[in-house]
Image (cartoon, rainbow, N blue to C red; front, side):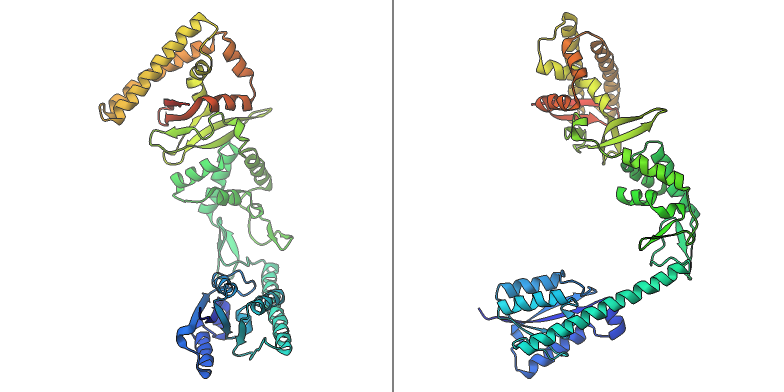
Length: 428
């Protein structure tokens, strides 16, 4: 297989703005060099990267070119200058090693490099040292400039943070609307709203779409209470606060309490679906009481934007789960109630199937299920009040044991999220 000649060109936004060495100009210089040696234009393959820094070699086209080198597809690499490949001394020596291992030459047109000799490789090393030095000096100057801005009370970043406006002199002032959004979300989180629910609330009330992690950053950042953290130092005079530090700390504590517990706390983990076939996710909400924090476990449908409490599901189907696992319920009255419950469940299932098949309309579906839901609740409460051994054992079981019982019994549960009603149970 005939090997190719690679032309590699790279430019960052800063390079082009300052030096004017655009991609086209680099490519033209490289091709002119190859023309001097009558190289076949058809043997040339171009690797081009725009707007990417040279501080590391982890760049798509660079990685692709080195992959071709390792597969012995390339005999020579042509670059405008060595720093187009890398500005790191360590990366330069790694690159030289790889090229020598695969008999690939390296030509830097402006630097006039030849890596086939010891002197040539030494020059490459020296140029790499200067390239890295130049990059680090630029970084230091940039940081010094930003630090000077901070010392003057200015905000050093390009975009103003949500909650503030930035004027042409780079000073921040409070954006009243955005600050109110932040505080509104904060108040709801302090009242027990989860980050997932905050995401839905943010869009429904304000039309703003943001990921939960973004909302978390908005609510917990130090700048909310007027503290700007820059390079390990706190500055208190850069911009005005939009909430108190006490409130911010309370939000952080509240969000920590909202963290998802172990899967075992969700007895129906991965088994809850809405009537439209969407799988529900698990969310937890905390409610602060006078002496404790109560946790409420929910299953939430992202499509329906509805949720159902785990206890609501459990009350509806626990008698059937226990009956499924133990047909010998230790009570005559219990057996009667369980059979009645099964008949109600069967009626719910048939109503759902009739609606899905178009045999009844939506109004009839809702009307019938509403009646059946009341019957189901009444019978379930009656069963819960009976002194049946299996029920007592379940209540005293650990979360792991409860989940194991569900896993061994149920494959899927379909729920009408509007009615908060278990429609269908698919048993194992």
